[in-house]
Length: 347
Image (cartoon, rainbow, N blue to C red; front, top):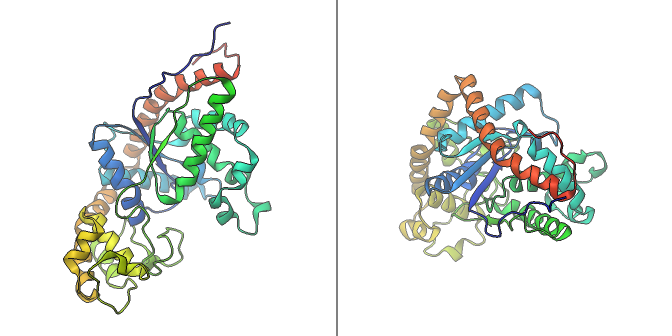
């Protein structure tokens, strides 16, 4: 019997990242993910972007809404600048390598690792005995999403950093258990002025599509008037903007709006402070509203146009799935060889 196939020691740079299609995309998704996804694509790096619908059903989803949300998220990716010809864009459930490798990683990961995941604790709360097993095992499937493509870099927000660390642990343990150098050590890519966009109503909480108040967030489906109104009504404090960033440490709402301006304008927060030092929010908010409308309203308009042809969105996702399958299937076949599975019937 031949020895298992080993991957090359040097892995080519390949980016993978995904977003759950469990609700509308927000400004937080755009600044924390989509905008950076487009930047990586435009740098000529191989980029694979996934709508992780298998993750979405770790909590119950209405089937019709899930289908709509998946198409809407795909429209958001494309409207934000993802080119399906240059990046691979697909939904997770169309490529079976994700769940197949996810099971193998369930057998590699340790219960103690999973139980330490803070996101599981936050989502389960005091009701951990009644949440789905899928929610508990979520990080192993996330590791499979990434490593099914031997991806080397993953753009993520700060809240996903712990899951990326677990992905690295799983890759290292797999390699050590089987004496191979097969999976890369994945590097998180956390950069930009607004990697964690906060609520417009409470600067201590992350902007979330699940927040009961629609005023807490800007949705990528919001029109220009709605975007401007939400920014004008965003919670602030009575003090003017200072002349240094450190002075915003205990002013979370003010810091959030400065970070949003910086991210939309491709400036550093320090540069924004230098520009608006001493300004009251009565003048800063209109400037931010104009900027947000200029950047986001075209995305909203294009999303609306794309959603008028769901069959075309489905075609794009299907074509992306075929390209993703062509990369992930050979990698998964090698994994089966490594762990000792007999595979007499190849696809």
